[in-house]
Amino acid sequence: MRSLRAATALVAGCLALSGLAGCADSSGSTPAGSGGPTELSLAIQPWLGYGAWYIAQDQGYFSANGLDVRLDDFEADADMVAALVAGRVDALNVAAHTALRLAQTEGVDIRIVLLEDASTTADAIITTGAINSVAELRGQEVAYEEGTTSDLLLNFALAQAGLSVDDIVKVPMGAAEAGAALLAGHVPAAVTYEPYITEAKAADPAVRSIFEASAQQGLISDVLVVRADVLEQKGAAVKALLKSWGQAVDFYNADLTQGRAIIARGVGEEPEALASAFDGVHFFDLSQNRVELTGDYVNRVLPQIAVAAQAAGLLDISDQSLDVVDPSYLD
Image 1: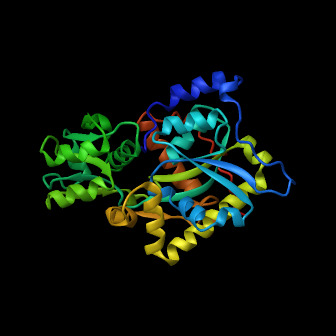
Image 2: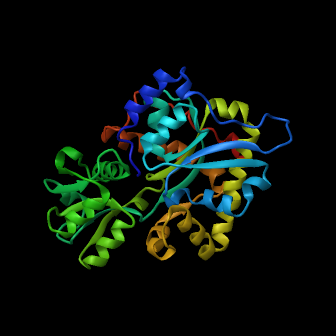
Image 3: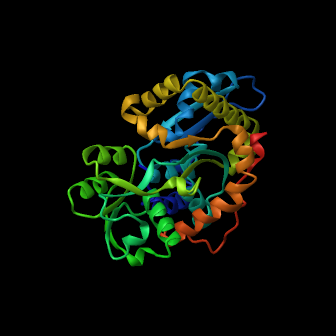
């Protein structure tokens, strides 16, 4: 779900086919000045970090702001990316390192216009207690899913300890399987995310986190990217979209119980099952966005994400320009 794996091939394919009818723009937007709501389509996955969009839809913020927003559900990053490149969706909710890869390595003309969420404790390196620090991972088997946020977190943690993935024994597998492998004693360490972290700790009290995403705020984060042509054609609508996000986050912060219930319903889970996951994720409101997208997140965090993504083989940062970030639509 939080993976890039097949995106490269699909992006290349859709770029090649972009002139054909199958990849034509089918957004069907309402013309400016027509008096009706402006249509926007957002690609989304059932990850609670994108949950404010479900609140905006449930509470009627979209329509109140003159929008007709379609939330298109996807299960894989690759499918979302293909839809964006083909013009079938206007915007994409995606991990920050994926956004950088699309813009810098794949050459997709997009802009990051919103910082949505950041993992604090919802992504972690966990062990059964025999390993007490990242430095002790040297020479050890570590289970994790390559090409994902787990890969990014692991590379960053190892670098902070003066190590690299060449200093460990990589055991590639999915996030759910990584936690199970740890519990079964097949590996001494695993990198995974919620709800698998909580499930592992509940199954074995000896399981503990030795490194969490909170070690670098924003390292494991999600952003909203919009196609450049959409920004040019529907700039006012994008501003209204971000306003809707801000209202939804304010609603969530004011009423966690109802906000979490709406998000849980949107992702197809019960709120109780996601309690630990909610606690490990921070949503960014518009005030925080205005600070982060003109300051620390752009100047320090995104470059660190780029370095970690390059170490994981997820990004070529020969061009380290961060012009992909455009905070102007937050006004």
